[in-house]
Image 1 (tube, rainbow, N blue to C red):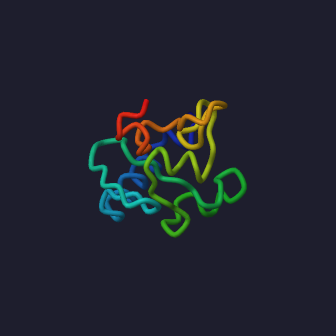
Image 2 (cartoon, rainbow, N blue to C red):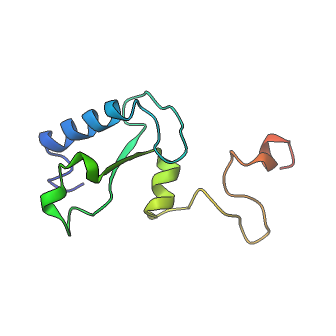
Length: 100
């Protein structure tokens, strides 16, 4: 975590953004009211646009899976399938039907 992301100003901006989005992912519509369940993504990265770091129009409130789609992170992705064609996401209908 960078100094920016641990700053009080960013923590407050994130909290306000989640409240403004009514604790709902802007991409898939999931309602996640718990603390830290939603991410606030910068549409234009802070490293390239420091002037937009606290601009609410530059924020996108996303659930972790949607954030990983919009901005892939390290680790195992939560979408797609493995080499055998088995879906990676446990939320996939394949698993809901008991076809694991």
